[in-house]
Image (cartoon, rainbow, N blue to C red):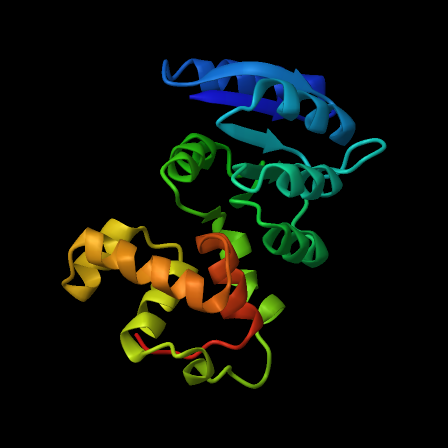
Length: 211
């Protein structure tokens, strides 16, 4: 697994490189210390995952992430920061980041990277607790406008809660392939790119509790 690490604290960068490479599964192919370098290095190395801070000199991590995702819509960006500012979290979700972790959750970094690589979206426990209040509107969306059925609504909610296709399949007594097909259809109906955008859509347009 090829990782690009960008953080303006060189001690943090060195520590992350040491920790990640100690797994034997991950290789830090490059490091940077600014948003501008993140864009440059991403274009050069095309890493599997970009692990990046938010507050950096010059271009911020959020600005860099937005620029990278415009050029590379499939980029897997995982933010690792000390700041749980509401505006940062919402922005990270809206641009399509795959995760938002706090540096204080040190033990969760490696599992988070593996989960993102596996196609999941990952947000630290403190971040997850904030999401409903940050993003829910007062009036829930009528999914019937999009021809979204009850079973599809249930899948949307499981995705928004961070469950993988395999976990959703077990919950709903479906095959993993069936869940994958449902998800593809849902994304097409809503005009969304991936499950992260689907989670943002769910919280932004009002949550309809089905499970």
